Image 1 (tube, rainbow, N blue to C red):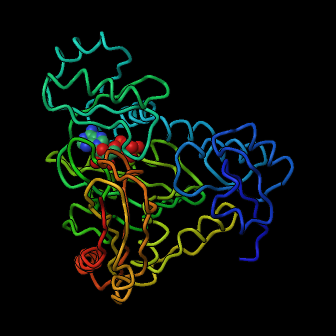
Image 2 (cartoon, helix red, strand yellow):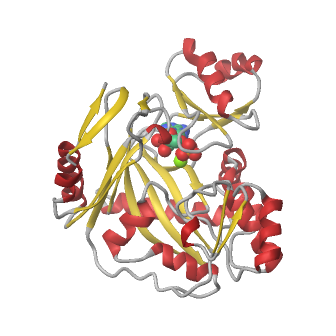
Length: 371
Ligand SMILES: Nc1ncnc2c1ncn2[C@@H]1O[C@H](COP(=O)(O)OP(=O)(O)O)[C@@H](O)[C@H]1O
Ligand SMILES: [Mg+2]
């Protein structure tokens, strides 16, 4: 794109550093450190990809230098699950019932008010860390302590257990105008830890349901006040209609916006976000309609010794990308959060269904030798 680019990362070996014209070794959560870097660099735009908390840093720089991004108060609402759900309540966006608790002593009152099952989660985590389903009264204390161990603030959100298909909605809001680029079907590991194991586009839900999902997603983006930003809105379609899980004022992760949106629509969502951050109005009109999918491997537990079959998987024409996330010699642990996942494949086909099938074919060819 011919841009001069500065990269900010706590890790000097981060993959993006070698592409940068300028590098600042600062944590993306360190707002004052990033403001100091901006003072030195004078950016024309600032953005992050699919991480939640750094949105607060982006918003602070954008406010100070009058750049295009969400405001700090929007960033706050979009990164604190408690503030977010209170905002949904205030603006009538369909959401699960919820309670906020801090101390173990409050569990007794909680159980007098609500019966199991329900969900517990930290207000300030991500990647499904600390999210747990409580199915039985006996599990409440352990679930609370597990969730609390991940919560930086110590606050735990207790929510109605919503059941039904889960989707995410990939959205761009540019100068007050909100456009939906894709509705993505989500596959999770299910109860108790709900780790995302796959995504596919376009959603295979009935059209009428997709229309309702889109309405709820736009309402949620407006309630939080998101503008000049992408959003990733997570929704579960319950018997009472689509309800909000959460949203991010950011691009969807797990390759949803880097790979799946371009493969299913022809829209380069990352380039669009860069242009938007620079104050331009990008072209986000759909170029074609295809299916795309990502599926994560399910592996045995143990030490990863060897991997065979990656080339065979890459030889399938529909396979666009294969990534092994873990290193040889690493111990594979039970999948409790996104960072425990081992490998994934990404495909493009005529339909979402075919794309998923080709992911499964490709994963079948990759052999993990685990001892
Ligand atoms: N109230 C709920 N009902 C049912 N499932 C939920 C609920 N809250 C979270 N989940 C499941 O847990 C996953 C992770 O929760 P989420 O609130 O999105 O946290 P994170 O920030 O870790 O992604 C969701 O994608 C969903 O599958
Ligand atoms: Mg989530």
